[in-house]
Amino acid sequence: MNAPIAVIFDMDGTLVATTELDFLAWQKLFSEYNVHITFEQYFPLLGMKSADMVKHFLKLVGDDAKDALLTKMQYFDDLVDKKGIELLPNTEMLLSHLQSNNIPLALATSSRQRKMRRIMNDTGLAHFFTTIVTGDEIVHGKPAPDIFLLAAKRLSIDPACCLVIEDAINGVIAAKAAGMKCVAVTNTHPHNDLSMADLIIDDLSQLLSIDIQSFFV
Image 1 (cartoon, one colour):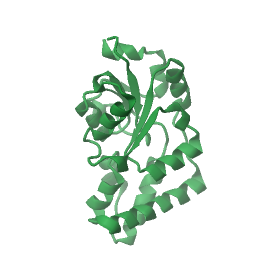
Image 2 (cartoon, rainbow, N blue to C red):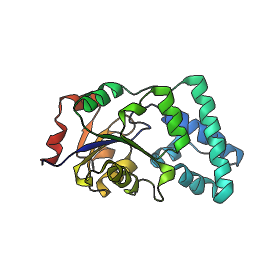
Image 3 (cartoon, rainbow, N blue to C red):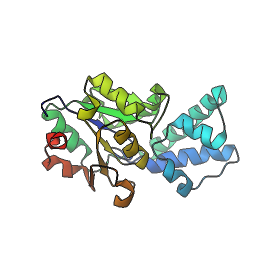
């Protein structure tokens, strides 16, 4: 295939270790509504839009949902202030490698813009991405394909020429529904749960020795 190709990254759990921080922030918010959530209940919903989380667990919509999301973000900020944000292994190495090979990169995260900006500011990763799409820009979140299709549109790249890097089951399903290739990294889920992906890796560094073009031959 001689058509231009691009790589689209998920953020939480793929590039940054924020799964625990997110859970703790949600858990604190839900407790204020007398809703008690365990990590086992939260885990299958990884990758879901924040607005959908509030609707699913708290049955909130409209201004009530907006207020709850603002509160959750404040709790997340407080946790980041205390604990910081940790890059997952070899994140910068892979992004630099792809960028140096002139491969357009996009970020497609179910997180809202405010959270994305906090993470990008704290990690300094924003300069790697040609475009960034967040969960509050699309109607249907993962496992729907909308967020990846919007990223491809902004890159002006055919979805069939896009490779998605994901860690969550919902993200892998979304990538395949978008007609894209998908590499799943086992930062969050075990191999068996990610079987829909075209390739499963345990560390982002494994992609350094792979010609991205080979996914589209």
